Length: 250
Ligand code: MF3
Ligand code: CO
Image (tube, rainbow, N blue to C red; front, side, top):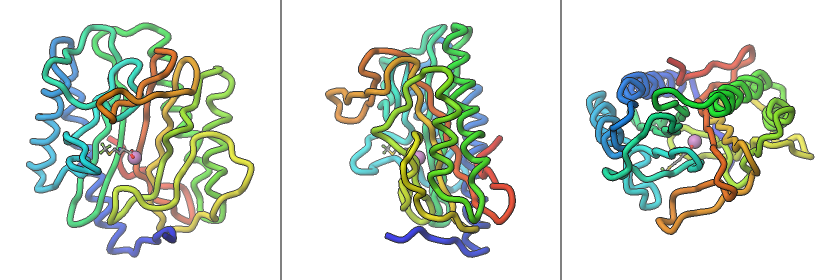
């Protein structure tokens, strides 16, 4: 499938979709405390999304059973919310969620600390976030897609962290996952040329240890093979002729 270029009308709808999702995250973040279950967070997020008149796009996606992903500590992504999984002081939790507004998808993720977290966890979260910002500096019309990948890789390299390779970012619009795939590690080729009107979900997933991941028996939860902590930072962005617009910031 070709990479879609959104019209002015579509961009307005994407902006609204993303704005509503950022609002959901802002509320969700307040609820993250020791003692809450990951299912409590899922229920809250589902309510917040529907209160905006929107639909959670993860629910039933290829059979995914919840409205958000809640991935704790060594879980990288796609952790299934569970009423028996109670957050504890010092945990880190990656929340990934999206919604559909008038047919247009948004997608974002953040890793949050639960109470006070270790310095190594704090640095992992901060550097993962920074790698996103280093990556999107390259997201300008006329640049190449893999300029973004290369910049994320270069941002993380000095720390020796593992950049997850099995999962990548993606185009987004009337579908949650559109072309192109956006790797977070250095590429040999240029990739497609970026054009104004592309909307992309850029989402580095970074492990303190090695890059390798494995799937749990629930067929969803992706965890680090070495058990090390993992962080995720994702925004839906718009490519323009000038600076990229981050649509899911709050
Ligand atoms: N948010 C994920 C992504 O960034 C998609 C998860 S869909 C689910 O691409 F169904 F697996 F939750
Ligand atoms: Co995504």
